[in-house]
Image 1 (cartoon, rainbow, N blue to C red):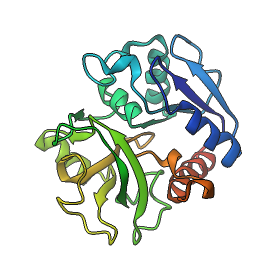
Image 2 (cartoon, one colour):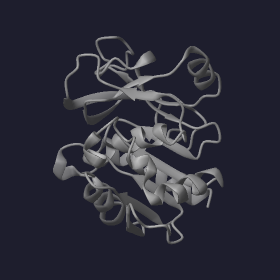
Image 3 (spheres, rainbow, N blue to C red):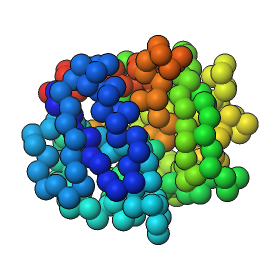
Image 4 (cartoon, helix red, strand yellow):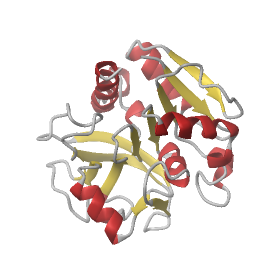
Length: 232
């Protein structure tokens, strides 16, 4: 399984996910520049966190028109894997590869801290192998992470088992106090209907090594690697 990490002007988590995929999970991984038009036979494309194009207009709105995104969209539409983390999630919604939008946090402030996630989808490749009975402590770092969608989209996400994670407290209770940004229904990540495009606001790549004092993110990314290998 070959991974490609797309780098946009303003990306700042590209080295983190590149390191975890290559050095920690021992997967083939290359860097792809936003002006590239060749995905170099990558099986899974990763859109990392950061502030692509300075988050001007809307977060991800300009990156969506980078030359490489035409190839990423085509790759996704053919069933190829695409993962967006934080700003990458925003780019995926701007590209209409995922439904909904990421709006300004409800407190109108940048939020950077550890939160807890509860896996939701039993059928999505990213979460199917995770323990639904435990919580995962993962860092967040965003100012525009409030997931929003209309009622019909929310209903479809729930009915189709497309919600990957919900924000919860340490005990697994999904509640308003555990919601760090005001996301509807505490949604922290979703996938598309065909389950090959994944987006999440928290940063699993920042919690994937013992040296960081937290390995919960390792299990999420390992699930992605395992799922991709099985379905390759």
